[in-house]
Image (cartoon, rainbow, N blue to C red; front, side, top):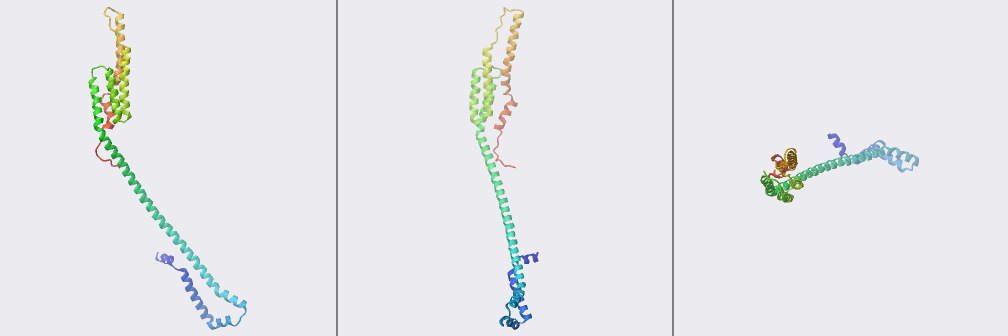
Length: 252
């Protein structure tokens, strides 16, 4: 690892300069400075000078070429390392941003749910009052028949529920009111036949059979209405709206 770090930090141009200086000193010492100077200054043949300089400078050219290649490679490695480091920084920033987004999303969801809880709590009293009116309506008609005032009472209750419940409760009340209306209409169009005591035998039995069948049809209308007021049905419809908590919403 230490050798690799030293290799990365190596200044190859400086190395080439030192190698050049040592090479020149070695050549001068080997050939002799006076002899070399004399050869270059006594008007030798230019071909000889060219061959001499080519042979003298060829190793230096190779050294500087290698130094240039190594320097360029070193710069490319540094660029690559910087890119890798930058990528790590970007990845870390992305992780931080994602974590912040997740936190903001969680806070947003908590705020929305807390607002919903607060809204439900604010509506609880009004919803519970309608729930009690619904129960009182059933109590008022226990053992009694449904009349026009029954229809209007349920219609008014449906309209009131539209302000504090969603459409499911309002439509449920409207369905009950419509069933009461249909029952009243059917009953007005199909009244009981009054028994004529002067009738005997089969005619009297026919009257009785007609009234019994009519009672069954009445019961089909009223049976569904009464079923809507059973505790299991009533609680199932209202539970979602009356089951609220004052505790803040915490996800997970």
